[in-house]
Length: 294
View 1 (cartoon, rainbow, N blue to C red):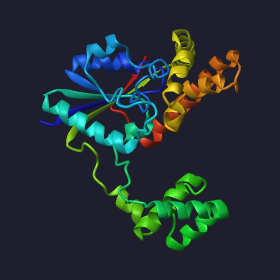
View 2: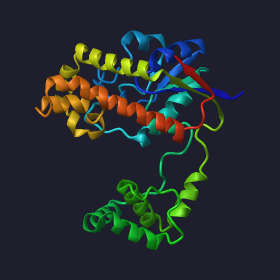
View 3: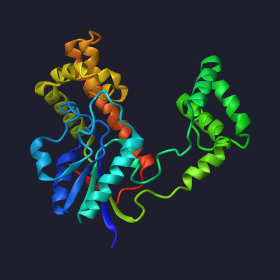
View 4: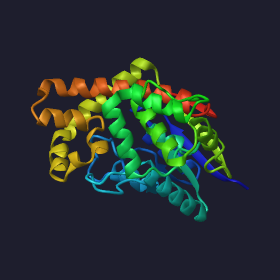
């Protein structure tokens, strides 16, 4: 019998935490977090991290893994998620994966880690080319290395063109070959039975929930939380410092934003994230097995 992997996602503020808790209890499962900010200790209020009472209801994994001044990336997440899933299965339990971080979520459906190793020398050389000749210079070099075309590469995105050129130089292969090799890699957790649930709400209701959540965070002490995290080196970790709620509060504390602008800025940026999440779910993840609309 296949092991069961239940994947529950949806936009920010849709109600994933409570739904996943009830679902996990009903399916004798443990929860694996799929949230890029919950891995950091001390980022509690701004991430709407599950409370102690909620954490006590069901065993949780991949929460509070590292301090805020230490970066954590997709490579570390894939490694830690695989270890957590395997350990849960050994205990005879099912797994509920829940969260809204798109790339982390995708790692349960498709390969996301590049196996091509790029040296610091290659990265430096490509960066120098970009500084000197811009995006067109990168594309000119890439055309010489990939005369058959660029495949699905977004050639208007400098960051992706940078990475593509680095991979071609490091591997000695053209871009189409690299894309084909990546696409041919096996599906993660391919031996598991996966049930993918997408949560949703009416647009206006979700907007109200986003606004209420942001207001509640400020009432609960988000500003004080960020002040404490800054002393622990939050800004040394761009990924953590740029999380919504934190980057706006950092701007306020630095004098770059008025207090009366803080709430609306967090709400606006959260709604923008919600829109991006919706696009990601539609284009990067397969069709859900079940859609739950509150």
